[in-house]
Image (cartoon, rainbow, N blue to C red; front, side, top):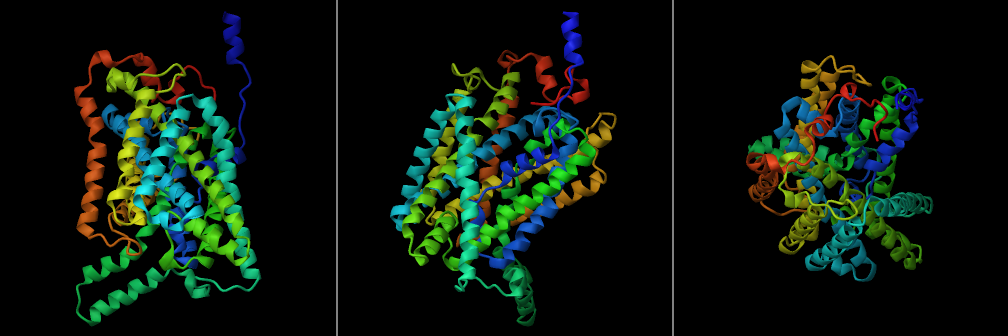
Length: 511
């Protein structure tokens, strides 16, 4: 046995390349479902994609790289080490419930795309959208019940066919459109590179001064035109989940910044050209947040007299949306189950099926998705419902990032001796930049967008705040009523899930 142990300990460690990390980051973040929200800005969308990339995406990736090479457990482990078990549990719960809120928005995109293929009017029908979301999600849940191996066979091809291919098609169609000398629905002058909302903001405030109007009213009115940028923060979210793989690099200190830089460039290139293609053929005032991509395909293919191709791309878009849902259906809930088994959840929520899948948690999230989907029925406009669900999910994720940045600052102070595979120079600067951008995005997220929503500001804020309170309260309730006999995971295993890597017996690369 001693010989076997020595053999294991001297086994040559294998590493992954920084290019692999970069592509993993792109796969986790890149998606085309959020592009219509930026297409309304035309060329100005370039700036609105670059700003969050610099002030949010890069700080998140860098800070998560230090945390991910020092402590096990992802955001849950980092927050638990910094602020204790209760807030750690809150963060992993909030991460799970954020994804639950996100499902109706991504499937709303799929439902509107499906409607546009045979009856465009149904794309704005809330009842149709709600029914399709429920059918799609329960089908995904039943598939997830069969285990990770089944899901993995589908998600890779779903993402390739439903994201990469449609995005490439949009870019090619846009280039052909311009080369043929066709007019653009968006302003393509150099001045359009500055989003119109920035220019109008200055004019609005100047007018308010001249007419002695209320500056605050003028300010909030002009800012409301920029609120859709919040969707970009959610579009860039998720990068921290791959940061833990930085410890699998041979030289994280040198290679991780390269991976992050390449990932930023690739993600921006995936976001911007397809967005501009949409703005070429779909006027800003008629762009649907849920059906904007299929609107663009229809406009291109109708102009080229090959309208029959539109349904083909529509099917691919639906496949991509389902691939995203499948990829996330079991993941966050699996982490929640592990923490729940440490004594946070009653036995009913710890139950797994014969495939080892957390079936009761999956059923619970399917029920919650069903309830949330009724927002499309009760909110008059489908785009409004889509935006409110997207904004809610974005606010949840942004709150999680606040805890991440604060944990990084505290752990640098309280646990300076923990060995980190990647040490971020200027940590406080990057955390400060990320925190400032995150807080500003939260403020923007509480303002209804002028392009789509006619809802009163106070009503809009009230609904979002109430949603945050209702979804954030359960983990504190579970923590308060927890019982010792709920714990089924050994304490040492639970502690290892958030411990510094240097304290773990096995220092091989993380799975």
